[in-house]
Image (cartoon, rainbow, N blue to C red; front, side, top):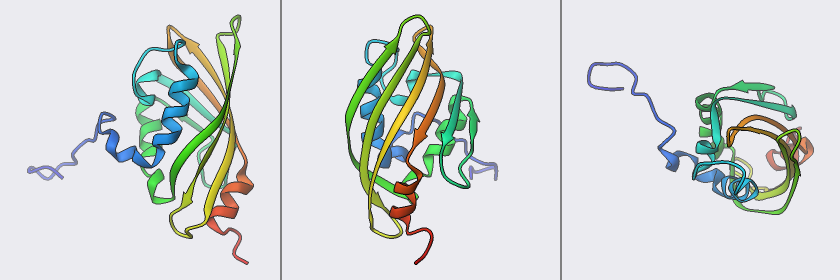
Length: 153
């Protein structure tokens, strides 16, 4: 809260809040290098970007609209997972559709259980005017469940 009692707005520029996602950010920046403008992951996104989580986990939104909304969603990631690395990057481009498909893996640890977290993703990304305008994400939900210990055994 600020001195007048109102909420202090947090900007996306406060990248330290997203440290748990750094390996993800770096592999995406690497995969999109030369196709989009911007330095940090959030700078690659159009203001009105649409993220769709096609294969995900219960409780996670299916659709998020806008760069700030994506940042708000990702800001709490470190409460659940901390990534230590990302690899296995494969980049596929369809010039006619202005689309790029990224395949990659992330590795880290679930905060609550301490269990290893290894997951593979496919992200289908649409680019317009050198910014990401649409992101369709596919992941392995079983990898998430195993890391967080759900269901309890």
